[in-house]
Image (cartoon, rainbow, N blue to C red):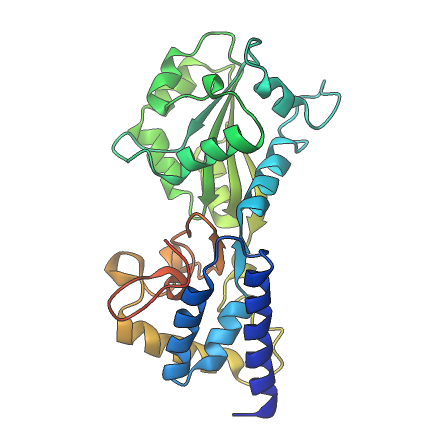
Length: 296
């Protein structure tokens, strides 16, 4: 192994250990990190492991709450008459004055209440003190009072846009939109991929999209700008060969998702509470042959 590669691997690993110890990667388990990285050591693919760590975007609890607040306080969320950026959050924190806004999780009727959309609502209630009486299940939206002028549909991540499309179709929300043409519809996520945003806007032109953070194809580990920063000849081809070898050995992602994540977006993004399936499975896939770095 070249000296520069060894320095990069050791330096990256030391930096991650420091991020975990200081709490910057809140929710990351140090022992689990060591187990995950040792799988690359055992296969003599440490450089791949180090590059995956170097490009990993991990959002802990504090960062998630900050992104949610940024989305709710963004100019796109505010009305033209708003006097300050916290006006929506302030209105939603009042229990006895109806703000005319309702929140609902992006969750199908056949899905469990543990899905990410409901988790985001709990985060909003706890961190921003949004009253739970302004939160509804999707099936209750048809019974909203006429005074409601804005519906905010929430989730943690929008990758391909398919989940939102299924939600609108399978929960009957399409009928709600037709019945309430004057009602503003906002889809709010902690983070979103530009491909997912485009699909939602193409299919549902009336829906406004607000995300705390936006990713693009350039955020993909392979074929984007992530590896272009490493000035080694043939580095992407080498790392891809190593990745494909591990993916074949342990069947990364299984048959439904595949080795590069859903829609092959190949992201390196995760939250403390879970990981989008658009992220490379080498981070989150769990089996008898592979220990994940983070939970799916």
